Length: 181
Image 1 (cartoon, rainbow, N blue to C red):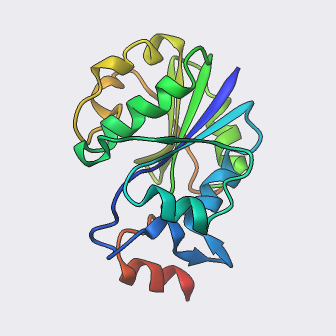
Image 2 (image 1 turned 180 degrees about the horizontal axis):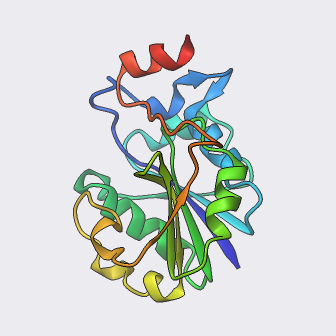
C-alpha cells in the first residue's frame, strides 16, 4: 500500500496565522499538497495548531485527518503522528502543506526511484516530496525535534525535479505575494 502524509501542523508564526489556508491559484495551500498525493492508496493530513479552523476552511475530502497534540515540538512530532496513522504502508510519500507547486508528476518521479528512501532535489538542493519505504519507516520512532527524517536518511536517492516543479514554500506573507504575481 502507498500512502501520502501531508504535514500541515505548524502555527504559521512567521506567516502571521494559518498559512495552510492562504490562497494560491484559487485554493488553500493545503489543498495543493493534497492534489499532489491524490493518486496514492491512502492520504493523511496532519494538523496541529488551529486544526478546527483549517478543517473548516479547506476541502480535505479524500484524506484522513490526524491531529498532532505535540505539534509545537516540530516536524518530527508531526511526522511521527502521520506515519503512525499509515502504519503498515509499504511506501509513504511526505509532502509539505506550504509548497503549492509540487505536482503528482513530481511525486511519481520520486516514487520511481530505487532504494529505501528517495527525495526530490531542485537544482541539487534537497526538498520534498520524500519517499520512505519499509526499512526506513521502521526507524520512525527515532524522530525528534524539527528535523523530520533528515538525520535518518543516510543513503537517500536524490531525484532531480527542477524541470517539473518550483519548490518554493510559503513561510511569510512576502513569500505569498511573490508567488501570487
